[in-house]
Amino acid sequence: SLGFVPESLILAHYKYDTFWIIVEMLTDYPESINVPMLLVTGWYDHNDDAPLNAFHALRDTSDPAVRDKHKFSVGPWTHSGVGRLQQGELTYPNAVDSLRAISLRMFDYYLRGIQNGYENEPVMRYYQMGENVWNTTNDWYTESDRTDTLYLNEDGVLSLDPPAISNPPDSLLFNPRDPSPSIGGNRFNPFDPSVIVGPRDQQDSVEARSDVVIYTTSVLTEPLIVKGNIQVKLYVSSDCEDTDMSVRITDVYPDGRSMLITEGIRRMRFRNTYTNEELMVPGDTYSVFVELKNVAYTFLPNHQVRVIISSSDYPIYDINLNNGDSLYVPGDTVVATNKIYHEPNILSLVILKTKTPAGIQETIRTHNITFTVSRIVFRTHVNFEVFLLDASPVELNLFDVSGRKVKTLMHKNLPAGQHQCDFNAAALPAGVYFAHLAVENLPVKTLKLICIK
Image (tube, rainbow, N blue to C red; front, top):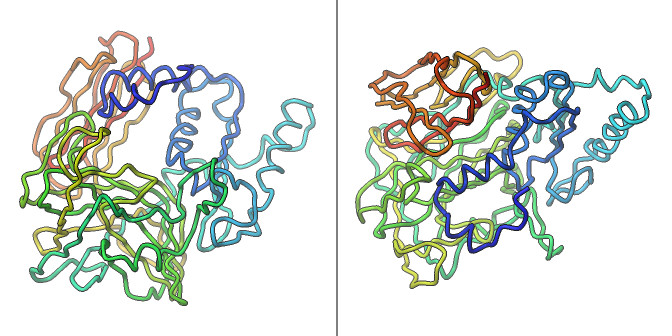
């Protein structure tokens, strides 16, 4: 345990450095777990994807005697609302008390020796919101079977078709003294029980403001089934050296409600990596990926998908002062004029990991950029897989826990598609390593690896 970490120490290390690598090592040790675990979270929990990652790490690297005994349950819940009927402004009757029941069965089985069949429970139970049904799987990351891309177009249109002609960018003003408010979502405030989190309508408090740009699909004629994380790639410019790009995804109901599903944000100085700061040149255009957390959600027929873009989402996320100066210290605020581009050769888009509806045949779309490894714990051999949407220069490096580069595994221009990199690690000493995948104009992706001998 790290014990109490002063806020001043956290703010002093606002970049990803050795401090955070050590913190991760001291707090993330699935290989040491030797008892069966039941992990529980909610799609509106403030921990984002950490429980999902922890569960799969347990399945891969915990004591071999218990690896196949871990269970996972994720419902339509907020952090403090697990098992309750009311979540935000919606109710989920078939998710009430489901956690209590499965927990009691686990304790009865392992602590009281009652043969109640708990060992035959599904590996993972997850709640498909929208459809409002429980599903099961052995591996969350294999639940989607395709990737759908929605493109930002002029006049606030979100479409499967990219822009056919050049369009003027959409502009939004961001005044740090009047940030876009956080309404619902995965906000967590235990000191103010009046704060309503979870699914909430964004119409009046967020969409009615002048500091947002909104893109919406046409009315759906068939279900759009999302099972995975959502990525939003934006081409933007600003008249400031630094600003933020915030994204909210909502489900627009036939009655007009715009119910929040998930949200995320990216600070432009960290658009490529959290290791180094790169300020913007005012007026220049940059690409930025905003990664939103995993979700299981079905947009039903007669509903619409909406993307709300702003430059703040407060108080879930810290306010950018837009001045390009030091972070997390008092300073003058600057009102930013930010622009979002959507042209045939500058495509701002939303990438969804989806599932083909039953009875519907469709060609699987090209994967977006992902980075996987065959085994996180390895002895002599590691196989990396890279999926590219576009042809790009790719660099894959291996670092040790001190941050020293151990080896460059790949450094070449690759065409769009799936690529592999095999690495024989027989000569590596046992220990913790980090694989960094760098693709031009995209955030660096990192995987933690444990070499055992």
